[in-house]
Image 1 (tube, rainbow, N blue to C red):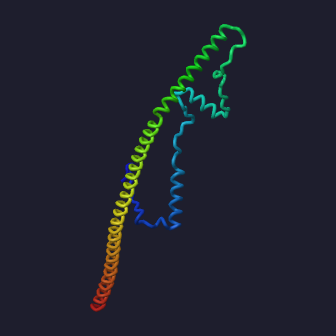
Image 2: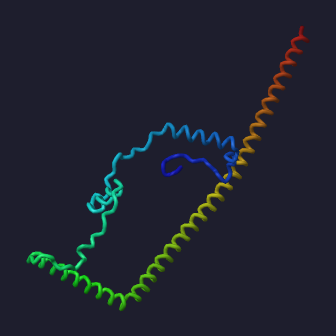
Image 3: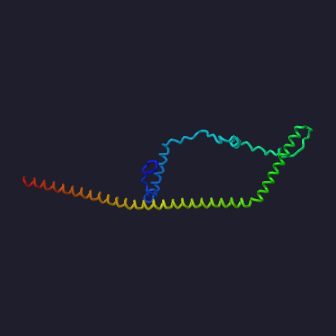
Length: 205
């Protein structure tokens, strides 16, 4: 009995009837008929994606509708002097220049850090990935071996069950044969008894 409470009596290592094309066709037809009587699974008509991220939801809607990706905005990276002598324009240009300077300064610091620690960080990252890969490969090999052992045990149990089934089938056939022989012998004895009784009646007359 499996986890769903269904009785499974299939012995694939013993039963060879499915190898017959006629039996296979009958089985497939029965499966199709059973699936035809099954109700389709309930699938929601609409599923809301990216409920917690408005940015991802908008991007998903853009891709779904087929709209092109908006061009990359490079205007904020330009350092151009205002064309008009306006105080606000010059203040915005000054703020933009300061932010660009800070951005370049941060990039320079990142490059220095990369040059100083990048090689060791890369080696450490590779070592960690190799360790994870080795653990995954070990786990995969363990699962594969577990599957092989399970199939071996299943085959052994089914072969043993097949021997018992063939023995029981042979004993059942022998019992049926003996029952038929006894019935035939009984019929013969009843016929002889009837014949003797008829002879006895005729002799008394």
